[in-house]
Length: 261
Length: 248
Image (cartoon, rainbow over all chains, first blue to last red):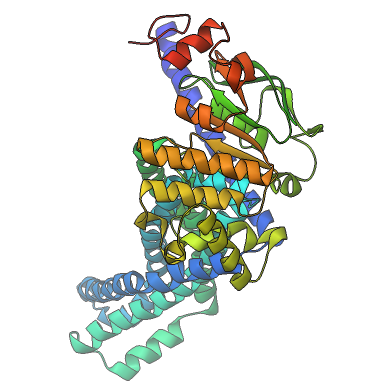
């Protein structure tokens, strides 16, 4: 009997651990949001976070988007050729980039670049007692470290997604007009005609949510890291894994909210 | 006066503080000694609210350390951390003047920089280091910068967490002298935790021996050698045999 119950007990403990971890992250996120509304504010740290998360992520976002847009155009053309639907390339590239690939790929790139960086930086600060030092200097670590980063991500990631969408569409446009024989003006006209405001709004909302997830997970794991180099490593790895999974799960939910009939 | 009243703190099954009781009179320098893992740092962090005691009280000038205005409370303290805990992303002068660049004590940047450079001079560093980053400094210089940061806002109470760990004996002596001079000239209440007996003799007015989570002996530094306490005797003479079990 105990042999039967043992796996169930382990499953129960695992479930409780996962629920407890989700609760802790939710409380952390809620505390970060409430601290955003209450002074003191740290504008220099916020501007620095805008630069680090937004501006310096542009190259990786742009490169990811342009190659994805180009590959998407080739795939749709090749796939569409099987049932004489090659002409849908502009429409499918546009809808694919704006609704799904733009936000998801930018979100995952931000998780790789920004979440890992935040988690490693804050975890190092934790193990070297810099976070304790902040407290002794009358500075709330959440206000000084988490709020500027999360706020900057909430603002800049939707912009990055918008930029990624445009660059992705441009990648498809270049491939379609240079390699696949599409007319440039007709391609652009088809793209503009096919996209709806709902597509663009969903893309930007996803960007905002994914940015929040990426920054919150980086801050949470960093500020709660274990000791030593191993603690920093685990925090960094855990933050990226959690951010990537949550971004994909949130994408599924948001797609359902925006586009379920 | 800082008073620890029957303070208990455990981390899981590990009981670190088991009823620590200690008085640190105002304006005196108390050095807490004891083996690694006996809870010395935990005791300091409990005062600052970095760790919450499981039970017992900590009183600072009669007021409970856990109640009241946190910012006003913490503004009375300065702390030198074991590893310096300097902020990597900020230049030295901004580390030193951190408190003066934000919050209730905020001053114009130029004034804060002047004060920071003045404090750097006080700990034996020149203005040249003000614009360097912590990673560009040696261990001894980082300790001095940490010390300058601890005293920058002229705190009433200063904590020193193993101030000479990792330093060569000469630099350790310099830091000990600096701490003693600064504590005396500022009239601050100081608590230092250390294993280093030369630090104890250089810095302390009073000494407390922490072992097994309780204070085994406390008294003036001058009476330390003739205390007759077997725990203290074993510790200050560094003997492997005695009531303190040495893990081999």
